[in-house]
Image 1 (cartoon, rainbow, N blue to C red):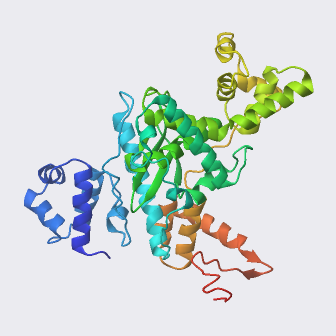
Image 2: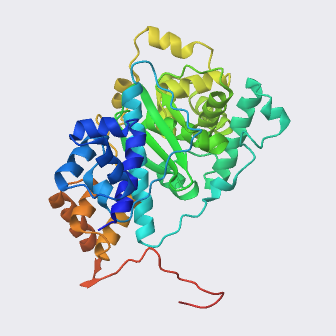
Image 3: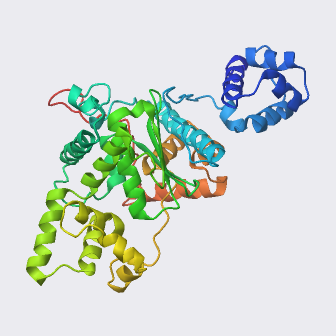
Length: 410
């Protein structure tokens, strides 16, 4: 059980995040303001009914207030919480949820004794807004486009994907950039979000209601912001309106070159023309499928590279061309795309291991996995079963060191 002082600190922190005064909380709970003051100082522990009321008012769970290993991880004060008109409250709710999920991720690492170390891509400083050369810092949009393209090539080299399609993108960026990627229910007008803190690292929310191609573009866009100014964060609208913003020009240029590298796209275009004597809509659909981008993105990329006439996509749109139906006819995509998992695979693995080591209870496991206890138990049993080889249980220790000194074994 956590101390009354720690509990009071969490109540005070949650109250400040909710922009409520002690008097307002007291009125809602039905106690004097001095009682709330005493609770926050740790001088008076709230009763169970009081704690339930306080948690409800502050929009936090009782579990979050009481659990022993909690990571606060306040978002960087430079975070820009911009949202389309009418979506401010919903976006604020997504920010809070993303922060909660990131905190739980960090807590599990802390419980298991895993120290977060900077990922390889975090060490790339050439594209940071505060460290780029004077020519880049001038903010010229043409310079930002070139810088975004250069950053995309650098990241592709770091991920060792050459100029082919960037597949298994989430797993690559989790490992190489240290991104904590969550697929959340969000307003359709919001595509993605990036928040940062020293405790949490970089947490990215992707709109799980969007198609795969859009999710990949959104993740690439947020990776660019991660490279340029992670502390400022980002709220990415579905319809980008800040097209003259140097940060957005950099991010869009990065996403375009990262997902559709100019050299590879030009070469494949030439190969299709050479093989068939022409380049058709079916070829655009094939290339879009190969690189896992939308038909619109690939068509505009081909226009941008002057391989197709400017206005090709607009002309097809005016004729009500439906890419998804055409792709299905060609057998290039399934009719239904599976919805992505809410939580990263690594977070689930950490939660299961913490439970296996009896560091958390079954109810806490369910809370970390955002499942009921029956479903959480099933996840644990399924993963435990998958560890059984030839009738023996293979214990997995994520913190195990395989090499302690050069040439020696632990």
